[in-house]
Length: 298
Image 1: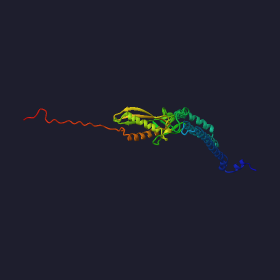
Image 2: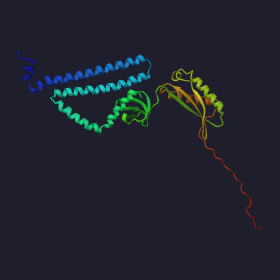
Image 3: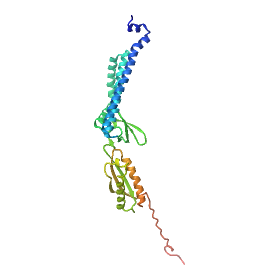
Image 4: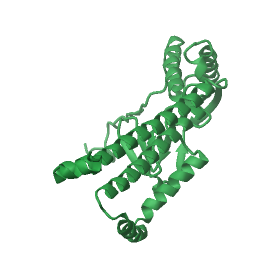
C-alpha cells in the first residue's frame, strides 16, 4: 500500500506542490489570523475590564487604556505579519539567511537615512511612558488644535473643529499643550457700555453664576464655583468684565456657551446695555463773519 508521500509524488507537480507546501502556507495564514484575533480579543477584554473597573466614562484611566490598546494592537499586527511572511518564504524555498543578511545591511543603510523615523518612534514611546496625552484629549500641537483620534508609535492623528484630520509625526512634536488634562477653565469676558454701573453688572453676573448651580445639565460639569473677577480692561467702547469657572476636562466650551446665553438674556431683561462697537463724530459749526477784513470802500 502506497504511503501519502508516494501518492502525492504520483500526482502532477502543481497538484503535489499545492497538497504539500500550499496546505502549509494556508495553515500558516489561518494560524496567523487566529493568533492575531486571540491577541486582539485578549487586549480588548483587558481594556474593557480596566474601563469597567474605573467606572467613570471618559476618565483619564479610560483614555489611557484606549491609547495603549491602539498602540499594542498595531504593534502586534506588525509582528504577526512579519513572522507569517518569513514562514511563507521558507515554504516558497526562499533562503531566509541571505535575505536576513541583506535586510540587515539594507537596514543599516536605511538607518543612517531614516533617523527621522527612529526619532518618531522614540518620541512616541516617551509620550506613552510619560502619559503626555491620550486618545480623546483636546491638545494643541504644532499649531494644530483638536482632539486626539488615534496614536501610534510614529504618528499622532488630531482632528480639529472643522473636521480636518491632521497627522503629526511624534518626532516633530516640540511643545504640546493638553487642554483637557485633570481639569479645564471656562473664561467668559463680558463687555458693558460705559454708561452701565460696574457694581450692578457684577451683581448680575454673580446672580447668573449662582443660578448655574441649579441647572441639572451644567452642575455635573463644574468642579468649583464660578468667580466674577471684576474689571479686566477699559477699551475704547467697553468696560470688560471677566467670569471664570473651573470645569471637568474638555467641558469648558459647554459652560462658556451656557454663560454667554444667560448673560445676554438677563442683561437685556434688566436693561443693562452690553457694549457694541461705536464711533462718535463731533461736528463743529463756525459762523461766518458778515464783513470782510479791512472794510469796504464807499
